[in-house]
Length: 436
Image (cartoon, rainbow, N blue to C red; front, side):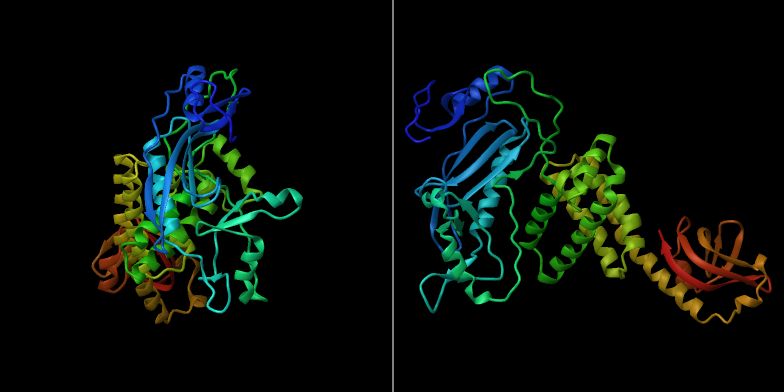
């Protein structure tokens, strides 16, 4: 919109044609506020400078404006042709906290500038990949109208498709995957769409407080942990978050309300990860009991260390979500308590599983010679624990076990077990998992 002048204030920084009228962001926002009752947006923060991974100082400015779908905050590089250089954007709901959106794009641009995808070729002019991954942005080029492809921006640098192809030349015969994502990080829990014209009516109310989608939350959480953890500990965090993501995508829909479930089912047809792409922090924590009490115990072949880590990482994630403002203090406390209990109880149950299995392995009972009334094959609830003995539901007991095992057992836990009564005493013939 170069050459246009804002009809209301005379600014030359015109970004929007509003009802056929060229306007700057501030004047658009003023008109939208008058039509909808929304408060006017604050002025954007001042310019900032960031030194990228190559040691170059980059100068950027903020843009804060109200799009038809919500509040958008952009951070775009200055001193480069329009549309080129580094660019990050975040979209929140119409009642989003602008400071949170600003903080998000600050962190995103700093993260982007901390990485280098291309490095100078040592053997020719041009570039080569610094690693096996390259990320960038598609931009318009003047030759596109004559059939040429778009240009690409990588590391804030504009390249032609031919130059990018040369950077890939050493990968002949390799497979690749091209993934396209939106130019803006969509942090809205739900989208409220209205027409940006002078005939705007009432805007739908009831939008939630801002929370990024679960997929974004988990990636940002891991990025924050990566900065402070050792490689070994971070690897365990990654494992737990991967398992949590799988649990959410496969079981999280059980805790949705009817409208949310309809949205999920429609999206799941084409996206098996739809749950983490659609929902936010509230839906994440609703599935934490499922994750700790069912998924980690019944669906994952996990040792004691991974089970303990599942509780630890869950606690850390809850506190992180609370610090970011996505969960209230009460919810954080509840999840932290669940995580602490899982860190204690899941490894204990795993150890008890192993001890009961070892006990069953040395059993000499021949089940073919056991009467039907003296045989039980079931998931049984532990009703009572004494030193060296268990009592199961239905009056089954005592079942003699090593003291080490009884020290671990807890009333209320269930066991997948085969029992036989031999000479009025119950013994364990086969043993499966113990479930807290």
